[in-house]
Length: 238
View: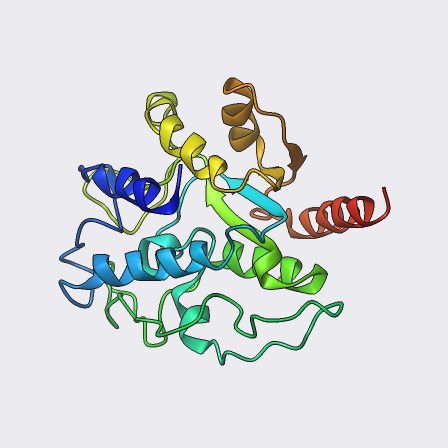
């Protein structure tokens, strides 16, 4: 599997009243323009391109959130942080390039400044879990040494309420397994980490083992950081 057919597979799933495909469809209530899906796809394409043959750690969580990939297009990544990216990163451990945290080129805002739930959104969507994951990983290595994804690639939400999150059903997780396997095939060199039990169980159902870590949400941030630091330290000193 190469990147182009993977993106086509990701794009193919149509949205429904309970699942949103941010790389294909427009949220007419919350997207800033009809070009939002193309902009999110552009983000994801560049994010993945720059990590192919480089990322050593693959972190798989459960599913996208409405404050994360729904607007940024990148798993566990906040739109606001993309827009704030200055493109300047200090070198880590003598590892050359890239100097940008996320990916090179333009970053687009796809959310409106006033969302359909009445919430003001002047600086772009911000997801707390994404902030914890990125802060931890940037403190441990270069941004391009890891890649983030989800066991269920698209955003599951409550019926007709796009600004909510819900746990994907077993049926949904099953339907997304081909896409998950295609994603993993892009990074055969990576060490696999499952963020949370749902992700670990999904990977295990495919016969794939992964290092389990605590999900940083709901008070799990400190343990997530501790476990990730231990895993990366162990890999550096086998």
